[in-house]
Length: 302
Ligand code: SF4
Ligand code: SF4
Figure (cartoon, rainbow, N blue to C red):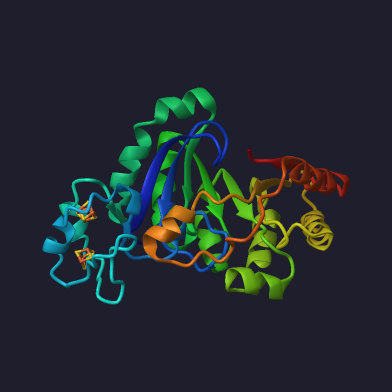
């Protein structure tokens, strides 16, 4: 059983990632490459170094520290990605926080220790721990062990998942998971592949599996204008959810935003949805109403 995983962040006091006040554990690594992803630092399961141009004071300490000659004197860019091996030496040398390390190897016990510290907030709010990412179930053994420890302490557990993992990963955590937040991004397989890198066959199969197992499940849909906001996709999503025969299975919309774009720049990853217009509040409301009219209880995460 995996006792360690690359953790990108452990964020306390979250109210958007499951019931009540939660501690969210972000694990690195994801099989999908959604073009709107707000956490590009969690896509790959390796440590990465990012450069935050606005914080740089041009002191030159990073260049002196880097033994690989990977620091470049460009005002907007600092790291030659061809030469950089993400060792992190420059991060430790920078006094201004302009270089950041994404990912830290942590043991299950160390993560649980942090989670447990917020227990009083869970008890007063009906909250608990949520694993997110990336795709947390690419570390199913780690999550299973973490949730076993949580169960022993009576801490509520939630998994935020893109669904694109082997069914065995769900089987491993199912008995220990209080709620699944399960993404349904696009119902058309080809379009799914175009915008996320893979088709949706495995995702839909896992959604059926989790729903049939009787698990507590909230479907979520990042609402991306012009990508999955069409009448056709709304109808297909509603039909799929209804086909599961779970009258309690609701859908939550996550309106598109650009809050992650700074991290794309920090990592020198191209952001390909720059020209996309944000949806107006009333347009998001209309999509929500459409889902409700199609028999799927829908809400909006604001
Ligand atoms: S050490 Fe930090 S502040 Fe100094 S040049 Fe490098 S990135 Fe900029
Ligand atoms: S992470 Fe290491 S190799 Fe990359 S720029 Fe910093 S010091 Fe150089």
